[in-house]
Amino acid sequence: MNSATTTARRPSKRTTHRGADLFVRCLRELGVDVVFGYPGGAIMPIYDALPQSGITHILTRHEQGAALAADGYARASNRVGVCMATSGPGATNLVTGLANSMLDSVPVVAITGQVPNALMGTDAFQEVDVFGMTLPVVKHSYIIRRAEDIPFVLAEAFHLAREGRPGPVLIDVPKDVTVVEVPPSLTLPHFPPRPATAVPAVMQAGQLMAGARRPLFYLGGGIELAACEGHIRELVDQTGFPFVATLKGLGAVPTDHPQAMGMLGMHGHQAANLAVQESDLLIVAGARFDDRATGKLDEFAPHARVVHLDGDAAEIGKLRRADIGLAGDLGSNLQALSAAWQSLPAPSIEPWLQRCRELRQRHAWRYDAPGEFIYAPALLKTLSERGHDRLTIACDVGQHQMWVAQHCRFRRPRTHLTSGGLGTMGYGLPAGMGAKLACPEETVVVVSGDGSIMMNIQELATLNRYRIDVRIVLLDNSSLGMVRQWQELFFAGNYSEIDLSDNPDFAALARVFGLQARSIDRRDQVEDAIDWLLDEPGPSLLHVRIDPRANVWPLVAPGCNNADMMEGDAR
Image (cartoon, rainbow, N blue to C red; front, side):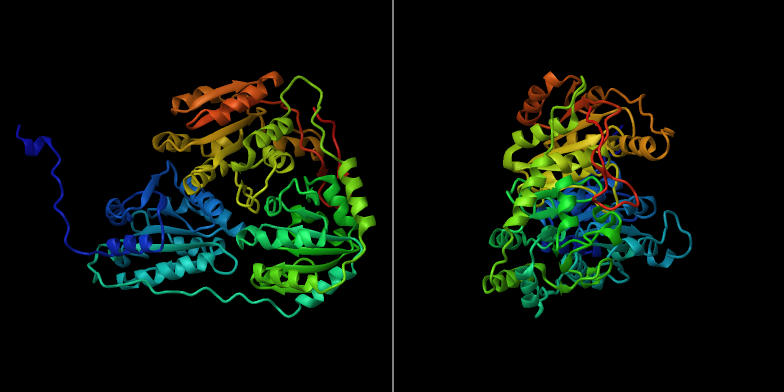
């Protein structure tokens, strides 16, 4: 048998410049250094061009993992995350990740292969209308019909993903566009950023602030998106006003700041919710009066006037009428408001500040829960303290998500990655991968539950392959904990399809995937286990068995206002 039949023949070096080569070159020129994806037939020419590009490709084990990893990369770095998939099932597997980015306003560009132009509309193999299918869950969509349009489409897509209110953009690329020869002289156009200007009503907003007696800042995720945390911190310090934050607003101002009241909303801090209900002025920055934050909307902050600042003009007045609406660049408007404040007399709010201090003291978290089980809030508090200021937490969805928000300290933006609007189980692990690749100097910890981890557990293989140094805390209560809690409280204890008592041995499973792993089930094991998790290099998993009956408290029940909070016994 000769060598030609036993050894794969090397392909000859290409001398042509195809659409795929142009596409990848444009990605590189746009600053893309990492792409998450999964190859297939329709997108194969682009994958053929990748190895010579200088772009790092991370092969996830499912396309949903690629989309969520791109989301985590974008949140942690404040850059555009990029994911790729082939046509048909590859493209449809991206959809949940795109919806996740859309609802949380995360800049992602998703690239999907498509059957050739001549076959579109013929029900060809692996053909789906991903353009039409994703219209409700992306900011903008493209189908590239001609290879010459590649530079313009890519440049505009990246511009739109970042511009104004960020969001995901889809680019569908028919295969014939990527194989045709194109002139190497094609270049990227430039899209200048929109000039940042403050709106004239800033002085009126400042006058409302100066006349308030019980003012309160209400901080949302838009601050992080606009990268204007320095401006809001300056204004908070200038005014001395207390503040609350949404789930996605945590870290815009440090959560241990002396004026912090905590997170508001369904599982918010009692002090925060009560302060909102008693306030006479809400200065809302980058928040949208989400139902999980407000509770019963028509009873939310009933005595408060509203100054609403947001990068998206459509959000102002959408759910709560604003007395003063400041739409446009959030950073510019916060700077202008800070300047206006310096020219106005400061209000006398010492009685209000004293009231807020009393609320914080009366409703301070307790960590001395009785019982023999590991108490998840105390474990997460310890983890947060041991992680210091270089800790980024990527969280899944469920009870553990609320415990992280309640009990972990966040001193910087973009260090609390969580699926807010969509509530995507399986988010944490791929998002943590993306965050670590975006910010390798950070200690990235994924906090997951035994329900959520199974949604994208295949990405443990990705951690192992690339030795992505992500550490996982897996809280295991052998159930779908949040659903179980609601069935207990609102469905007369009719526990329907929440039993996960047949879970695998998660530590053993992690070892099979090539990770270090430990299991703990006693309180006296917690501190040593956290030290191990944070100190040992390399991807690892800490499996923590907790009380199957533990609930998240407090809780604002459906249809109630935020002052009407249910409290349970900590176990």
